[in-house]
View 1 (cartoon, rainbow, N blue to C red):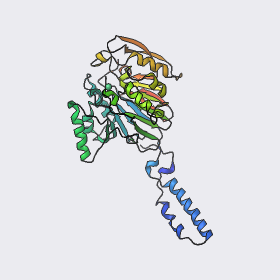
View 2: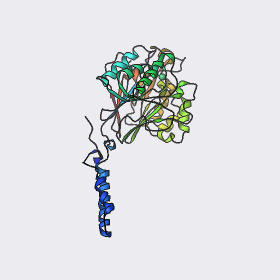
View 3: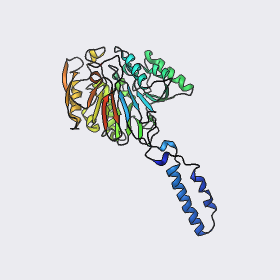
View 4: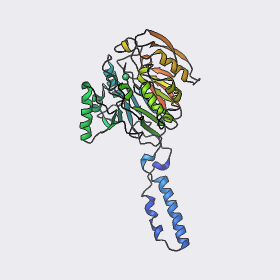
Length: 372
Ligand SMILES: [Zn+2]
């Protein structure tokens, strides 16, 4: 069902009034010309009000952000308030038990049917824990735009780009390597009050550490913005902060998908201070399961930094979670703010926003990877 539009601009009221204004140029006499000019102005105004194309509509209602529990990896589905337009960021892991099964099962519950559309699919960076399910995604859904960081994939994942290029040749998919500029290429919904943009800082794509070539996405819905930084670490965060066009866009984020599974090499003090997120989600594996045995994500330091920056008192309820002291250190138990959610503890999480506020609830999806 389409949400009701707040603006009459979306309503088609017959032939363009611009045509009705045409006789004005043939009018004779000063008064006549004046009257005709007034009529033309009025017609123009009517055209603006009533005959703008459907893309000028705003949307109301809840945008949905699903942070899917895929273990040590990322998979995020964003659905517009119409429930007709979707963006997928990343596609789960292979190196974590049941991650692909969890990813595919959950995405199919949310987007069922025969080749349903996914307007935009983003591969943040070509690491196993982010792109493992992308070949399946390209086969299963009708992907409109496929965005990645433009870097080559390892042998294991080469077939993703090959399939994307085949679909591009067939004219069914647009393949867009990030790296040109700030733009609306990630827009997944035509509503005028819901936008998605790539934040591509100066110098993007040159890092040796693939994490720091992560495609960063900012979604803006009415008053609020939502940030998805892939596995960007301090080097890319510094690039984002140094870019005068991007820095202000990081400010006052309502929601932050915490970079690099909550590792302390991301979410630096400077980055968090600029962003001041009010809700955060960490997608990581469970304590000592699969690859997270070695990674120990999230890290205690990151959780502490988030606890310090989330200032909303209304929800200041503290709970505890498992976190690594470092990659080689011990697991420890740390306190977190109620507005920090972890897939390892909370399973898949649904964040809802009407563009003014954010709220959270369990996604309620059947998932072979359970929470702690
Ligand atoms: Zn990762």
